[in-house]
Length: 242
Image 1 (cartoon, rainbow, N blue to C red):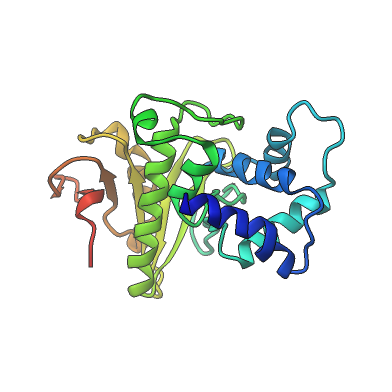
Image 2: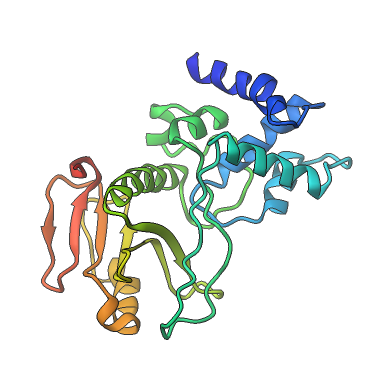
């Protein structure tokens, strides 16, 4: 398969060309699979490494995992979403860990050895990283949503982040921030309908952002785009476009 060839070329040729000779290609490939399993999560890099070397006592050093991350980022294989750390707001105690995404959700599927049928049947693939109640399909749907939103945001000179408080009481799958400081929170729901519960974090942000708040957005699997009475837009991922 083309994706397999791409991944093999990445490990065997492109990675060493970045100045990191790979002594154990299988370990790097396992790390990539564990990273794919952590899609749309903020799992620590130590957790990802432990998952990739489960049952092994001789684990790579932390410096090795950091080398993996840095080289793969330069190769545009990793496309993490950085945390939103605003200044001049009432928001404090926000998490500082990035949210993990590969360059494309198709790569995550291949690394985890799952196909469309398996995803729709609820198969979690070879996931080792604990993601709470999230399903692999839900994580990949968020991944595709983030990939699309970042393209459109770039065209508007906006930056995209994610937000999560330290204790996890509030979070936003994405935060779009414009050059003039306006903030648009985005939630991603693997569902056709949206309830008030689904937008509770957007309401919380509205209360704390004041005039910098822009009416939020919920991305769904539905057929129709519409605006709720509270001003929040509901847009199917399939309808996002220029």
